[in-house]
Image (cartoon, rainbow, N blue to C red; front, side):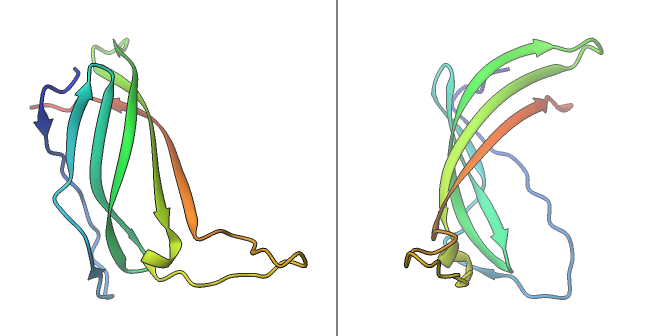
Length: 117
């Protein structure tokens, strides 16, 4: 169930009437760093802007579920800048700080099921 070397994953998009501006995007990939660590590269779209995002993931474990499906648990972490996606809104607080920082940490807990080959 653990990846050996590099593999790719597919992305899906929905059709909309809006135009998506793409910058720094690439083909999604999953690369094994070691037995329990992965580097995941994919595209994230926010407000019609698509940018490449890199996540570092730790494999929590693999198991066969009661229906015979291979499952894997992952915890992934990455960072993005809101301004890279055209999000400029800032609400000033009384202290002079802003309510939402430009840098945002993404924390994902994932349970995935292996699909048919």
